[in-house]
Length: 156
Image (tube, rainbow, N blue to C red; front, side):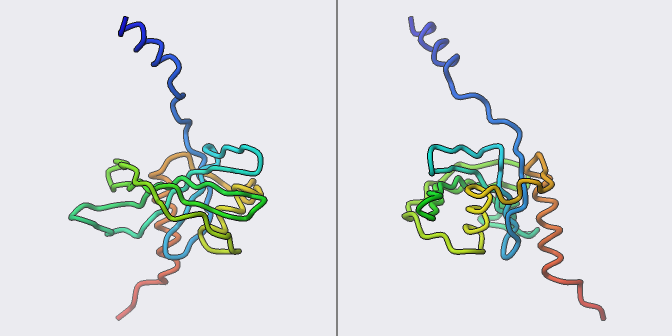
């Protein structure tokens, strides 16, 4: 009986995630990519997954990280945003685990990471932007953009 229940549960499990469709959202302290493949709309509420890329050499607890994933919920009509969680992305591609973010929704201001994600999630900004289809490709591109912000290396 348990085997039948397990088989039925596996058949109705959520589908495997599709390949990401990552477009650059913003570059500042981090390079942030919005995953258009994760976009889900229910009325005026939209959820989207975002990848935050850090500069090379970022370590915590003796482990190297490339950045992390967050799920966001936006109320497009109310212009509020809520980061729901954060899951680290190690240099070797290992993700997680996700840690819930209990900060309440906040008003969205123009610009900044949240504002730029809001524009993509709610307004379709970056609809024609060139996308990458893997986290590691986004890490490579994001780090190149972060390096450009830092400027050229000093000369002697």
